[in-house]
Image 1 (spheres, rainbow, N blue to C red):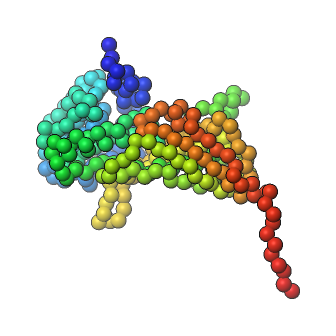
Image 2 (image 1 turned 180 degrees about the vertical axis):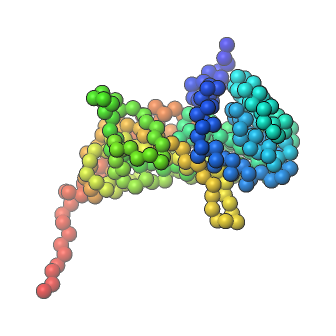
Image 3 (image 1 turned 30 degrees about the vertical axis):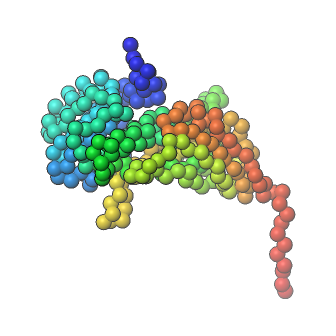
Length: 307
């Protein structure tokens, strides 16, 4: 029988089934980005903690340089799998897989780097923000400062109006879609440039709710019937090169309950609110879009002509 936290985890995505981890291991952008960021952030002899370790692959990346890695995983099936997989790989013995709840666990000693990849588009479903904020509070109470380096270091979230096709072999179905960031989808038309609605810096205190209202200038005629949510993870800041190591989540496209007809030059107002780790339907329920300014109804400006 699952307890309350386990039931919520199953629903919200924390208890990711073993077979799903194959998709994450096959995601080259994710794997290469994290490997590069961990190689940069973890110094020789460092102590590392990973919260929500899954297969243990990110902990294994850290073990290449670290002297000790604590890999915390809540799913008992994944604990067994991680221990088995780490035993098959060099340096796997440096990783201690701990069966514990990331909301409650603290390492037995201070650590230099904390890795946490409980990341969903828009910080929905999974508990990345809540877990990190809880950890910072409890870690400071036990060990004092300074806090370890967090990986990812920051997250940038943006939103963009779309005209999205929802025809599936003649079957109209306005549903949530996840799209690869490197693929051009003929049925997706960008109606305006994206706007940033939140920047999360894990080295600073962070709120657990997002409430946003913003405006877009429509760039072409059409029907705005969806909003694209963009989540860019700043895995590591490489200060000496003035650059970052990033990982961009798949785009998430949410259909609007009421599509909006728009023309080039119109001003669209969009608003929404949700909590970090909340459900996708909770965001959808709050999503609103309306035309504030119709360009076609405004008087043409008078430009004098000179001979």
